[in-house]
Amino acid sequence: MTRYLSILTTGIVTASLLSGCGIYTLNPKGKSDIKTIGIEPFENNTAEFGLADRLTEIIIDAFIADGNLKVVSVDEADAVLVGTLLSYDRVPDTYDANDQVQSYKVIMNVEIQLQKPSDGSEYWKETTRQEGVYHPGADQPPRTEEDGQQLAGERLVEAIIDRTTKSW
Image (cartoon, rainbow, N blue to C red; front, side):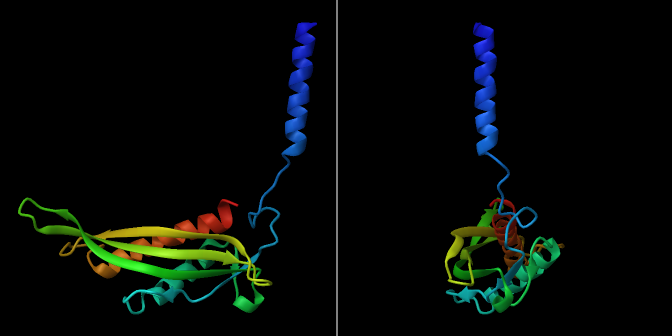
């Protein structure tokens, strides 16, 4: 009798879990209504001229390469990505034995949000910090501050694409 109750209880618990936990996803490859994305030019709250425009281009190119969402104009999009470059710093990262800087770190803080174009409400919003290290004087990239910016931008893109297409 105890074995029968144990099996029955296990069956009821399993049935309850399965009936309440059907497949739910907002992933564009799943059942989401979001098939297209518009990307607003990023705002720049820093003194780094042109960096927000460069980030916007990097993000557009990455979404096109990713292919999960079709990049369209903001007017035609199912969702709109909006971003602001909040801060930008370049700081020494490593030193040699003579206290000479061997590498620098580019640090970008960015506020990003995915909005519904119909009413401007948010799917999600977050502030993220991304870094890119470069080595001045090295023979190969990353050796310039621009290389460090590119690396930080690529990390930002990964975070945005993951949040937008994979982690809903």
